[in-house]
Amino acid sequence: MKTILVPSDFSEQAGYALDFAFELAKKNQSKLILLHVVEGVGVASGAISADMASGAEVTSDDVYMLQLIRVAKDKLADTASESRFSEVELETKIQIGNPYGSIAEEVTENDVDLVIMGSTGASGIDEVLIGSNTEKVVRYSKCPVLTVKSEVKCEDIKNIAFATNFTDTDENVIKELVALQKTLGAKLHLIRVNTPSNFTVDREAKKLMSEYAEKHGLEDFTLNIYNDLDEEDGILFFARETGADLIAMATHGRTGFFHLISGSIAEDVVNHAQKPVWTCRIL
Image 1: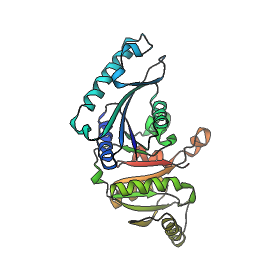
Image 2 (image 1 turned 180 degrees about the horizontal axis):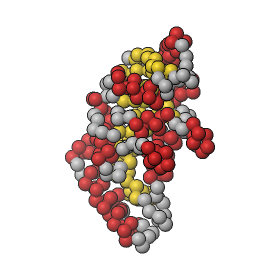
Image 3 (image 1 turned 180 degrees about the vertical axis):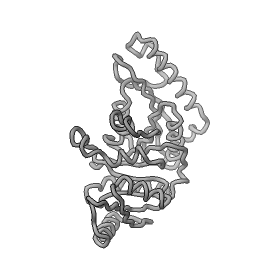
Image 4 (image 1 turned 90 degrees about the vertical axis):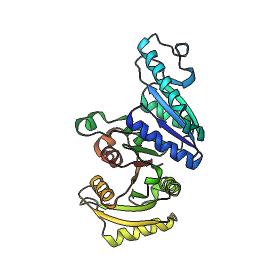
């Protein structure tokens, strides 16, 4: 885990994400990139370094936009000046454009290994019609994404609940998750959620899970089967009942009409879980 990206809108949740990212960067000697995206209509999209954010570099006469950039520059500078960041390599950036596109660009250009971002979640009509930038990042990101909604420390993550269907298609996911598990020193709880529409008898499910664990050389783990009416509720209730500190899931990154019809369990869990959620797209 060489590079960690933290998108920030300077909210409380973004602060929690940065705090966690800092701890993780210290553990792994990772580089931290702190990114703020300024959204604007009719402004050329692109990244500018935090120490070069001035009118000379922005091709727009929009005074309000320039003011936003200057405020962001000052806030990033204040953050970078905190004494703790002398312990890690930190780069601050301002990008102009839409948040999801800017984050995706940073992930690609900097070969980012993990995105850590704050989220307030979404529910009701906002979830149906609008969604969130977090959802888009979770759905399409080329690297794992960790979302946090409240204050959390690395040392608090002792139990990880990993929900999967235990197929061979998620090999990149389990590889990334095991690396995170070892970094955090956490126990991994594999969970298969049985639902009325997707049911496997216990003996078959346990056999499948055991073979999966053996194939991937898993250590310090448990096997669990949980019955519920749907996968999302099963994952959330299991995590709550077992005291899981982090929920881990794979996502398919589906788009267009198919995503509209089928939705994404991972995105729903990210929206509704109170604990941190780690997601990784199946490649």
